[in-house]
Every structure is written in structure tokens, then in C-alpha cells.
Image (cartoon, rainbow, N blue to C red; front, side):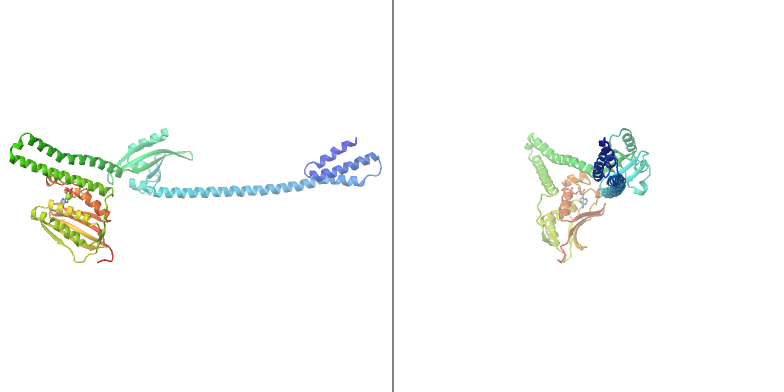
Length: 441
Ligand SMILES: Nc1ncnc2c1ncn2[C@@H]1O[C@H](COP(=O)(O)OP(=O)(O)OP(=O)(O)O)[C@@H](O)[C@H]1O
Ligand SMILES: [Mg+2]
């Protein structure tokens, strides 16, 4: 029967301060059992005290533990909040950093970026797109894209991307400023439940021009090689068919064949030259050179030719000029082409002048003539390969249209520039500017 006290006392002790309370309860129960065994008598003071202790310990410890727990919970709630705040701050900083990076990329990327919302309003435009479309951000933002792009095809594609979610691409040809060709790639962009279309613009004008130039080049080369060849073949056949028996005619035909084959050889040389300068494979042997020497050498090589054409070849060169770093052979080749052109396109009785001057750290060598001049519309193109102003006329003068293209490459390989000014009927001036070697007069 005494066994029943143990569980009763242990019940008080078990929860929070389990160890101490259980020990006290055990002692108390032991004493109580002893007292009960002794039978009724004077109350056991010790049992009373122990019982009181056992009763008090749970609440006291309970309170202490609960308040301890509360403090711990409070502390960990604080820590969790601080951690959450720190994480939020880090996330914000990361977002801001990413946005700043994004801004830098958008600002500096070569491709144009437009973001157009569901109502076709422009919500983002980067500087490249501003340039390509010829508008400022201020003008474009919030406006219907059609007011800016004026492109109905683009509008149709935008609608399609919004409807299907599939990317699209198209080519946009702009009349202004100068027949630009833009490649536009469209993709659906979702942000915060909003649907918009990202339009990426790339200026492919230059690439298209190069493609066209390459195609033209191949057809030009073929044509230029075929023309003299056809002529040589034709005369050879005529000779074999009987013209050989007429010595005078035969001689005339053979002379034409000789001229055509020389032209063919010159064309092949020029083509080889061009491919070498264009691919940067030709070797330049640059050395400090006096511009006067380049001019004197050119004049001495072409004086006879000028005289035969009835052209007065003159020079206007100051005694003192800075040196230039040049491959003399190459630069003489340039000047020679310029003077040959001047002689070719100046009627007899005209004048061709070679002059030089020192200006702004550069030496300018000019070849001017009193010839036929070049129409304004052709001026921008004469440095292109095979470009000739009057194709019919230059054929008779034996030109291929490669001379100026080669000259331009050589001058640019010297860090210089070549420019032309001309007026039809009055004459032309080609100016080669080369960096002067400083400190040498
Ligand atoms: N001084 C000039 N006056 C007028 N037209 C010129 C002059 N120089 C060049 N041109 C024009 O520019 C074109 C290109 O000149 P370029 O020297 O490249 O070729 P080309 O003289 O025809 O042939 P080549 O390859 O034999 O030099 C010429 O065909 C001609 O129409
Ligand atoms: Mg020429």
C-alpha cells in the first residue's frame, strides 16, 4: 500500500526540474514509507519539509525555466529577425548591383534594345536603339512604337509574339539617315505577370555592304579578266582563219593582242598587290624619308609620260620639311598612281602639280590637275575597288579601277589618310597626309 506514495510524489517532480525534484521526492517517499511503517505518531518534520520542497520546486523551477525559455526564444527571434533583415539587405544590394550592371550593359552594348509593353508602348530604350532609330529616350518612352519605328511589319510581329510567345525576327530597312539595314529579333518577356516584347536591334548595314562588295568583286574580277582574254582569243582566231596572210592586218592584230596581254598582266599584278595590302601580308620597310625625295623620284619616272601627253608636270616643294616614316617604294607607287591618273584625266595642254607642305604635325603631299574633274556623286566611291567614273572612257585608257583602292590601303598602313577634292571641268586634287617624325626639320 505504501508503494502508492511514490508515483504520487514523483508526479510533482517529473516535469521541469526533473533531476532535483525526483531526488527529493524519492527521499521524501522513502521517509514517508518509513513513517507509515512506524504507524501513527508524531509527524515527521523532515518528511514535511521534504514534501514542501518537492511541491515548491516544480513551480519555481518551472517559472525559471519558462522565463529562461522565453528569453531564449526572444533572443532567437531577435537573431532570426536580424538574419532576415541582413538577408533582405544583401538581396537588395545584390539586386541593386545587378541593376547597375544591367544598366551599364544596356548603356554600352552595341545592339539596340527596346522593350514594348502589351499596348505597344515603349517602356525601355537603350542608347544604341536611340541612335539606330534616331530618337531620344525622352521622345520614345511611353509612346506607341509605331510613332517611332513607323514599321507596320514590326507591329505585326509584335502582335504575333504576344499571341504565340514564340520568338520572331525580321529585317528593317530605314530610309533615314542613309539606307540603314537593321536586324530585329523579338522575344516575349515576362516580368511580374506583365507581358512585354523585347526587341533586339542590330545594325547589319556594314555587313551587308561587305557581302555585296565581295560578290561584286568576284564578278568584277571575272569580267575584267575575261574582257582582254576574249579580245586576245578573237584576234588569234581571226589570224588563224587567214589574216596571217595579210601582213599589215596581222601586225595590227598582234599589236592589239600584245596590248591586251599587258593589260591582263597589269591587272593580275594589281590584284595580287591589292590582296597583299588588304590582308596585311605585304612587308613594309619603313625608314625616315624626306618627302622631297619621294616627289622627285615620282616626277623623274613620269616626266616623259607627261610630256608625251602634252601635260606640264610641275612641283611646288619647300626646301625644309619634316621627315616621314615611310616605305619609299610603296609611297612612290601611291604618288605614281595619283600622277598617272592626273595625266590620264587631263586633256593635253593641262597642268599637273605635285606639292608638299607641313601642317599640324603632318606632311601633306598633294597632286592637283586641271583635268576633267570628278562628279560629286562619285567622289565618295572612287577609292573602292574597280570603281571608275566613266567606264567606257577609262577602258580606252587602260584603267582597271584598282589604283586608288591600293593607294588608300598603302597610305593607311603608314598611319596616314588620303582625300580628294574635285570640281567637274576644273580639275582634281588628291592629298596624302602622313604623320611627320617630330623633332626633325
Ligand atoms: N585625277 C583624276 N581626274 C579625274 N578622274 C579621276 C582622277 N583620278 C581618278 N579618277 C577617277 O577615279 C577612278 C578610279 O581611279 P583608279 O586609279 O582607282 O583607277 P584607274 O586609274 O581607272 O585604273 P588603274 O587601276 O589602272 O589605276 C578612275 O577610273 C577615274 O574615273
Ligand atoms: Mg589609276
